[in-house]
Amino acid sequence: MRERLEELRRHGLAAVEGASDEDALRAQEIQLLGRNGALTVLLRELGSVPAEQRPQLGAAANQIKDALAAAIGARREALRQASLQRELSGAGFDASLPGPPLPSGGLHPLTRVSRELEDLFTSMGYRVLDGPEVETEEHNFDALNIPQDHPARDAFDTIWVTPPGSGAARGGAVCLRTHTSPVQVRALRRFGAPLRAIAPGRVFRQETQDASHDHTFHQMEGLVVDRGVGVAHMLHAMHALLEGLFGRQLETRLRPGYFPFVEPGFELDARCPFCSGGCRVCKQSTWVELMPGGLVHPNVLRACNVDPEVYSGFAFGLGLSRIAMLRYGIDDIRWMLSGDLRFLSQFPA
Ligand code: DAH
Image 1 (tube, helix red, strand yellow):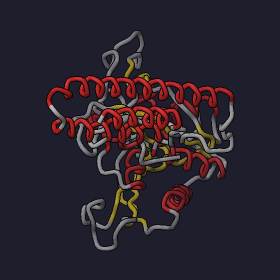
Image 2: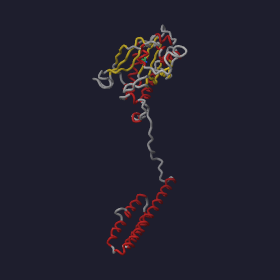
Image 3: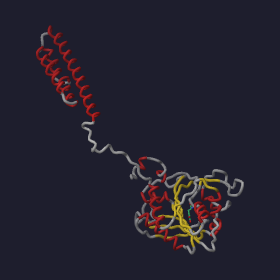
Image 4: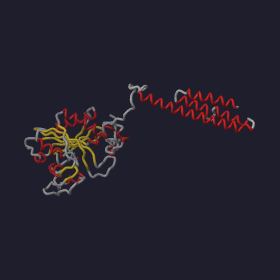
């Protein structure tokens, strides 16, 4: 028994020293000290040696166990140091291996749709304009032929910054713009006619949120003012927009619509791009509302110092949020501004 213990010590220490890496060392450790390892097997046999020899042999076995454990610990540390040295010295470092993948961001669906439409319209000679999100009552309403007592104001659930009608002069009040239409006014006053412009941006309304309403959403205004502009020009622009969005020409229909800043005013519908016989998106009607528009009201032109006897124009107001939802099959507008990565990461670069 004693000899076998001695043999185990010698053989064990040599094996530990000879382990060339951490895996080999671990294998040795299991073989020597593991639950079914050599030492355990010997200790089990201890029960069959004469009782008077047991304490001595037991003590010897424990010594060997400690010695082996210490040797394993030392060897492990030595192997670690060696591998660290190797890494630090650059040997074994392969600079041609690909690095860990870096997560990359994507473009928000609204940004995508907006940029696509900006490209399309700039290619047709439109300029892309911007306007303030905090807007005066005068730009947001009065100049658009919606005077203070006009019933159409109620439709706009406005978020007022200062009370409507307040301020030194009439129109001195301030609100969060309820639509992108005030950019029409700013653009015409600044650049005059003729003018072709689109204006994408955020708008705000006091809305109860649900799957299709949010207090903050996106629109894109379109405006063309020139001599002799009529409904046919408006339809052409709308069809170009549609084709740009859906990649094909969809059947459309024009319904009368009322907006104080256009006369006549229309609603453009298109055949549902997702079905032929009715689906959830078109609410079984096979038509989807795409955008309102019309010929710019002479009062609006006048308010912008453009002579309605010389110039005419059309305007439309595209619901960008809704269009992005249609385009990407997004079923709840609240995802748009949620900032939720589970949503956003579905639109990789
Ligand atoms: N500004 C309107 C809204 O937000 C949409 C609109 C309708 C814009 C007709 C237009 C237009 O330019 O001609 O409800």
